Image 1 (cartoon, rainbow, N blue to C red):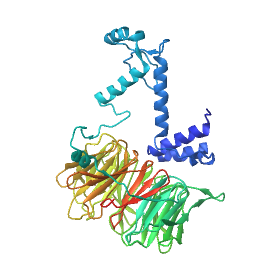
Image 2: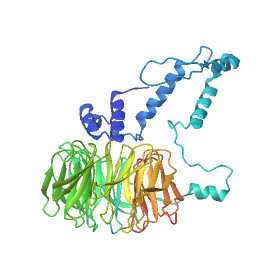
Image 3: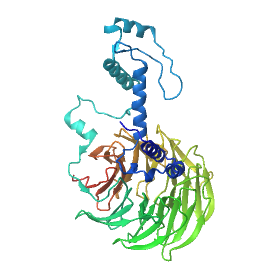
Image 4: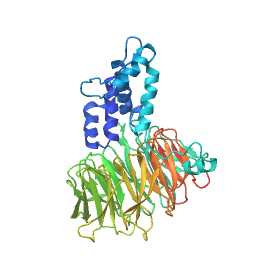
Length: 488
């Protein structure tokens, strides 16, 4: 067994990045030089550092409570990574130990008891409490509640590292971005692609693709990379503009409605507004937020919103601030305008979703609380005559809310790990969710039924619905899956 500091540093870097500590991970990667050590080439699953610590903690627990004869002492005191452990043995536990063979429970028996206790008490340290059908339920009912498995999906191969992003154009062209320093534009029917390469610096080191976005008309694709470079490509994969600014990682890129302006949100709290036709920087908001800018969204061709880890949402018009929305108590991860512009929704690490209206005073309309952990993403049903939104959380669930009456309409629970991506179908009848548990779930918005489940070969980073009805899945294994949920 070889324990290398480069490997440890890389696991720490991945933990910081996956947990949303983007500024800290940015600084750590340069100080530790993790990208120069080669560790990032390994297919490291999300949450690897936590799993290693959990296994190490379990070993320490066993080692501490192991008797000389191979049995385990029954201890009711919690065991943690920090602090001195002091055993606490209850009287009935001691009695049970005396009556057991060899003076105590065997390690295997003890492990089974602990696992059963976690299930009985609802401890979520290893698994989440989800709606699992009863084994005695009729076969048809079990299939309806679990969703039929997708058995025919097309796998697109071309990336050499985890795929983080996917996006369909208005014309149905698929683009993807990965950790191998490339974005790709796909001919899905043929399974072929055009590689859009991003090189960083004179050494030509590859960098993660951090954002991709098609213009609303679908003629141009914007890509951003961790080295702070923003590029605009034609639908055929030709480089049209390379928008150079400071070398600060780009977190999000967004087109305005006309496709004339491009917004980029950065790790250092700045926001840049670009004229796509000339390639010129129109506005540079160096202190848009006190910390990292985590998301942005356009209301129209001149007004947009941004959010960050300073716990605020800010509204801008032509590069000038017009309103600041405060109320969240932790980082704000996602914001989206209602299709008709009536509301703005925000999702936060404080476990809540807030709905705002610029026409109301005060502007806060609703606070939706129900998720047990951080809310990572929020999206509106794509219908201007409705006010329904969905939120995805690290508690493994998706919740559907009605912004008119403030009610929770659905709780979609089938994932066993954090849900980090979701999308409504273009007609608003269905919703797809993806998670670290390698599952993609297709839901009926009308009744919350789980219709289909696709099992990927690794963690799912993004899911997007094509105008034609196909679903694209960005997978950590470097693959992209495409399937039709209504026929697969």
